[in-house]
Length: 137
Image (cartoon, rainbow, N blue to C red; front, top):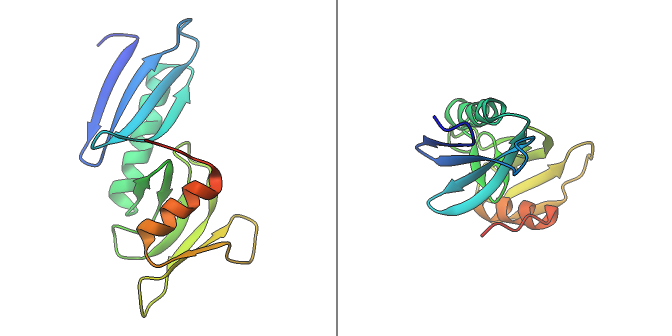
């Protein structure tokens, strides 16, 4: 294993970890089917790899969906509600889907009112990324 580069694969996301020029920081670029889905960072290759493993556990065990630099828990396990996180684990709010249709809502952390709504969870996740100013290719 090269001490400056590592590529780790998961069925839903890939993390390419590289060292900055002075090797004081490592960046993990998250991609899904060639599309950028956020970044992880840490002081070592192993710390970023560990963060990636936590992210994969969220996808596998808590039904997380990674899209445009955010993770919505409870999507792929049919709970259809849960925390919304950044790839580094910071909780930024809560989302939920209405029972009678696909309309989904987002409430930011520490706010009691919904800030965003969309006709589907995918569109809500895009709206959250826009709200955060996250622009991934």
